[in-house]
Image 1 (cartoon, helix red, strand yellow):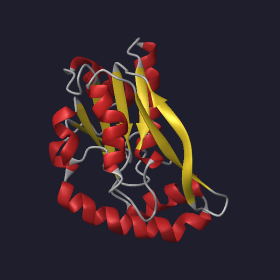
Image 2 (cartoon, rainbow, N blue to C red; image 1 turned 135 degrees about the horizontal axis):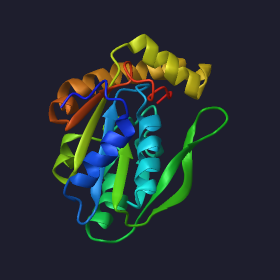
Image 3 (tube, rainbow, N blue to C red; image 1 turned 45 degrees about the vertical axis):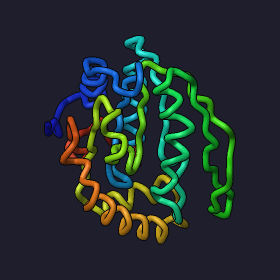
Length: 202
């Protein structure tokens, strides 16, 4: 369903996931997928805030905690074994997030505990990939068609040093999404170009 111009995307998305059945064990999984710079992280933070106010006990995990410039998507087994599989079994998850040096190099970072939530909000590029759709209560595709605008937003977030990396990332994700096509499986699509609420950089 295309809800691109809805007035309150975060409230709308929170209502959708709370109305949907849990499919990751007893957990409702909300995946917010989209291209880099589309506003996914900003939308996810808004949704988590709404869910907390509604007493839904959400947890937020970002694919940015796993991905690196040289490993955009193949890290998924770490997320599955560390977070998704335990939560499906009613057990808390844990993963070691990727952190970055001042020189922009990825290094193993702190361990992150994920208690069993009412709703797991998973946001980031490839979060709605085919392998997890059967366990996903709601898949959201966040659209922003302009690659130049998305690049500018991502560079504003990460710094000018990241520009060549982000340009390479955009080329990769174009190929990834051409095959994975999450928009075709999405329960709802929003446009960050048409929503004043979705002005974040990712």
